[in-house]
Amino acid sequence: MNTIIRNDANWLPSIFDDMFKTDWLGGTTNVNSIGTSIPAVNIHESDDNFLVAVAAPGKTKEDFNIELDNDILTISSEIKDELETKEASGKFTRKEFSYSNFKRAFSLPDTVNSQNISATYINGVLEITLPKREEAKVQAKRQIEIS
Image (cartoon, rainbow, N blue to C red; front, side, top):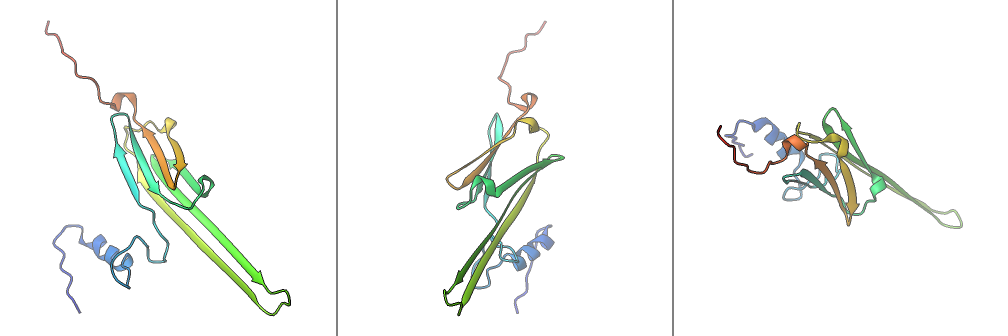
């Protein structure tokens, strides 16, 4: 048995992450404790907006649900597939089903203009544009005259 030594202040979440996100066949993965894949997310900030990009190939735009509630942006998806095969004589039946879902939530900063949020899904990437409020945008440098 190995001793786990943690020197950082946030040691408790790290231990649980290690336990629940470990691929016991070797390495680590982005699969949670019940086998549901959690898509990777990139967040980019520019002068005018934030861009949230979610890697979710193989889905359609109808598979996603995006909600905003009290400055919490929630992105979720749930897919249920079912396939049934029967022999004509009725001797065997095979029924396979799969279920996949994920949910990610982000707390939005006060600088986001929540009325103008937009989203697109192209080539397996869900992109959510979070525009900044006018007062939060970078202002051009100007000279102030002394009177």
